[in-house]
Image (cartoon, rainbow, N blue to C red; front, top):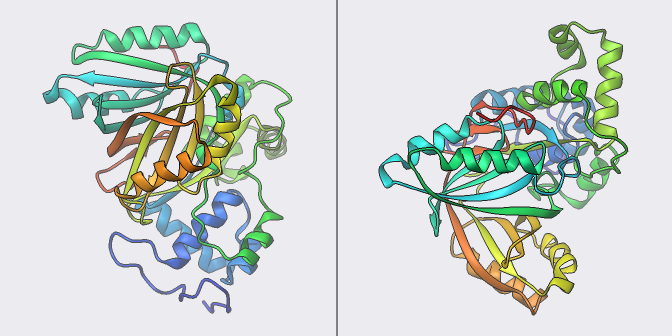
Length: 355
């Protein structure tokens, strides 16, 4: 298939070396971060590659587990006390088995093996604060668990769906901004319905799944599914997110930082932290260390530079704790292998009964 000229700067026929994504791969992921369900024909002109080539390239990335589009409830849908980061300490010999066990929990959005003051770090979403309490109690009853520490999220300043690969030119970003359909969160007008939750679970496995395919699985008219899907996404009740195997994309290290600022400066500090390039997620939490950020880095020695940059912007900020990622077991519902590629999906479901 002929490839038209564009700013990607690499032939679409080029096959990236093992363990890396090439420039077109990165540009495609970046484009889908901005417009996760955009038709290939709509992405062709900004990327300078024909629609058929984009479709084939995405199929390869998705089938290999190198990139994917998922869907989950908007942070605005989660009530206070129902979203938390939980530090878990465990007996050393059970660490990996425990992580894999917790990765199977629908409430566990993400599970990480980390270096720091704990062994595992979980991001957990439940339906209510009482459900979160039940989850933490159930976690403590697992034989291998020796201690837990829960940090309740007060406010999400930046969600991971808003982070971008930065692989596109300014002109490409401008053209794609006209089709952007999944990055910005619209004002939430209503809460999720039971029908919405069914759609969330379907889209979690493939956020680009066609209306025709969804309608066939659910046994509903396409027109009904299309209306429900548009309402769910345009109403801001759900978030579409394109993600990639971080090691293949050149992001070799990640960490979670717990920081503190004076309470009167908390909201402004969280917003400022969100503007830093490496900040994937920033949130205010109910703890002495009242601000946290999840950062993605090209190398671990970039962490010190990130902290210095944050301190330069927020003079009152103090770093209180760090958890450096050793391996992702699960990220936003995606089960990941040692190399960061997707190996499966356990859709995030805050409403799932707690065992």
